[in-house]
Length: 250
Image (cartoon, rainbow, N blue to C red):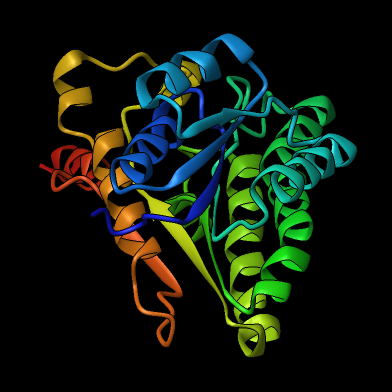
């Protein structure tokens, strides 16, 4: 028996990276997994790896109406949702203040902040009715630390996601709903393709891998109902930023 037999999980941004790894890991423990994202082909490829326990529900998470349609479909077809992995998000190339444009800020906020809020708002009524539910929101170390690496727009957005998660725990604890802000450091995912400076294969291997985050998502989703993991950081052992700073001083 899997740890999540009989449970239903909704994973957003499930077509690649952390979302894909989380979906695979949850399904491996017996969960029925609903996969959302903007690219149907990617979602179907992940679903094919999972099998009959996967349901594809494509949606742009920045579109509140589309997100609500997914929630309604989950309710109608599966009758419940026990786990929300609120993972969809992005960054942009032109991210420094010297290059940042209003359009870029809008894209960051819609994808990272509004998308996260839309999923949480859509899921809360179902979880309240159940008297139980786990929400895991992919934030970032940029949601706790301000640095030039992520850029000011991404950093502000991920700070908002962390605050959102903690506010859910305050207001929804009496309904049995638990929320975790998952704050990874550098993870080897497609979002790195938006980095202004390309990374070497050696640097990528030293990062947190998506599968590491998938295992952590399963851990968070399988904690007993009387405890809440409010926030968790997962970072590479080799802190590239710190090591580079030390090297400059030598």
